[in-house]
Image 1: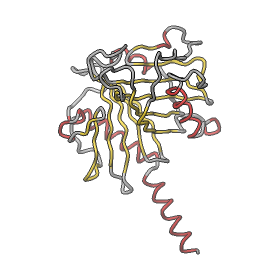
Image 2: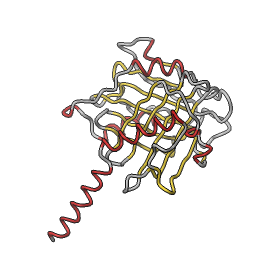
Image 3: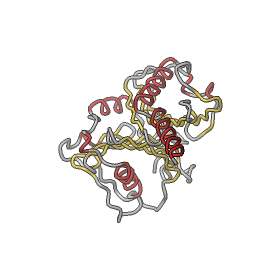
Image 4: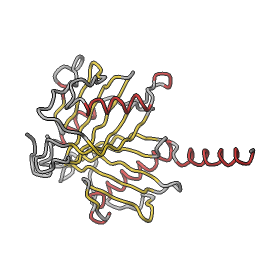
Amino acid sequence: MRAHSLIGMSFALKASAVCDRAFLEKTAAGYIQAQASGKLDSLPLAANVSYQENDVPLPLSQAVLSNPMTIDFNRTIYDTTECALFTELTAATNPHPYVISTRMLFTNDQRISTIQSVVADTGDWLFNATSYLHWTQQETWDPIPPGRRDTRSVLRAAGDAYLDSWTNATVQVPYGTPCARLEGGIYTGQRNASANSCTMPLFPEPFTISNRRYVVDEVLGAVGIFNDFPFIEKTRPEGTPSTNLFRVEGGRIRYIHEVTVCATRNCGR
C-alpha cells in the first residue's frame, strides 16, 4: 500500500514539475522570441508536434511562426492544471500587421505537442492592429490576490455564458461594471470608461459556437477560448477561427478580447 502511495506521489510531483508556472512562463518567452526572430531554436518541440494555423494543419516551415516579426505587445495566461498556455501577440508596427492568438499543449517530458494559432491581419473581422495595440496596453491584468481568486469552474462558466448568450437571451452573463470589449480594433471601453457594459445584442438567427478549447489561469483571473464562430462568415457556416480572451474579477467579466478570421476579406453580415 505504501509503495502505491509513493508511486502516486511521484506521478503527482512529476506532473506538478512539468506544468508549474515557471516552466510555462519560460516556454512563452521562448515562443515570443521564436516569433520575433522567425527561428524555432528557442522552442522545445516534440518530434511529432502538431501545428494548426486558422484551423489548417501546416508544416512549421510554412507557418507565420517561421517569419520574423516586430512584436509590440504580448500577453500570456498559464494553465498549470491542463499544462497549456494562451499567448496574444500584437504586431502593429510590423510591415505586415498582425494580431495572433496562440494555444500550446505539452507532453509529459516538457515538449510542445500542439500549437494552434488564430492569425488575423488586414481584411479580417474589424481588424485594426494599431487600435488593438493602443487599447490592450491600457488594460490592467495584474495577478489577483490569492484570497480573491475565482475557481476554474467560475472562470470557464463566465466565458461560456458570454458565447452562449449570443443566441440565447435566457443566458445570464456575469458582466461587471465597467466591462470593456476589444473586438478586432473596436473598443467599447472608450465610450464610458467607468460604467460601460459588454452586453451583446441577440443575433438574428440561432447558431452554436463549437470546437471550444480552453486555457484557464486562476492567478490572472483569465480564460482563453479557441472556437469556431459561425454566422459572421457566409462561406463558413460551420464557423470561422476565432478566440475570446476574458479577464474575470470577483466572478464578473472585466475585459473581453476577440480575434476572428475571415475566409473572405471583410466578412460580416
